[in-house]
Amino acid sequence: MILRRITEHVKAQNWFAVGLDFIIVVFGVFIGFQVTSWNEGRETGARAKIFSSRLLDDVRYEAWAYQYSIDYYKDVRVNAERAANALTGDKEMSDEQLLISAYRATQWVTTAPRRASYNELIATGEIGLIEDNFLRETAISVFNQTTTGSVNERARDSDFRKIFRQTVPIEIQHTLLTKCGDLAVEPGDYVSIVGSINYDCVLDLPINKIEAAAALLRAQPDFLPALQLRFADLETAIENLEKYNADMLQDLRDLAKVSP
Image 1 (spheres, rainbow, N blue to C red):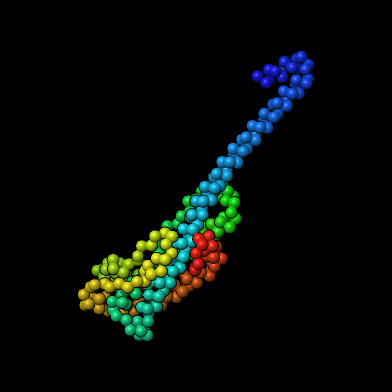
Image 2: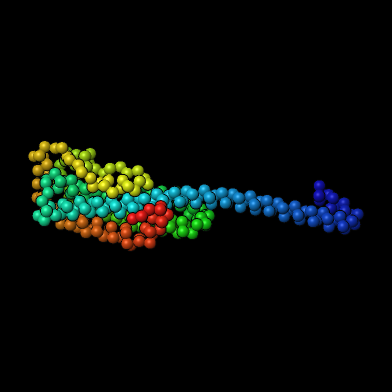
């Protein structure tokens, strides 16, 4: 329509009308670009808001999970020290308590990471959608740190864990798991983290079976050296979690609005 009008005006040498039509065309194109740009900006803003909200939720979960690892391994360390002190004669401990503490000293914990939003932002190159620099940098730090994975792998593959499970009868191990195993902690529940492994429990087994299992452990020549190594590894693990990643840990706590 507009092209036909311009052609007619050119043939009639109505240059004023030609100029007016040209202005109308340019203005129309400009408005079209502006509307498209506005729509794209609105869509980008909406995506940024959604991803920022999702990423914040994920990072707050990771803050809880990281704190869970720290407090959990501190409780494991307490039990490793108890068992070691009993074996070296520094402190008296019943055979039942030795089994419980030694079992808990073998434990390790892991939580399922929530990194779907971060992975999508990285894969699509849209990490820049997160305008909050503090949130963005904290997410990059937590989702690229390897300390937690290394700590968990070393705990899972420890010689002490293998010796304990190779030595203690199956019935005793089953009872330890069901009576003295880890308590479930809901994600985000900081209060229930402490004591989720270190709580009072009883095996409720015949004393002769408890004594026999404890005797098997005491008779293992590598049991105490492996336990002492386990304790040292726990010391290092906690140090790494708290101090090696101290800045990241503080950033996570700030985002989660929790105190150590």
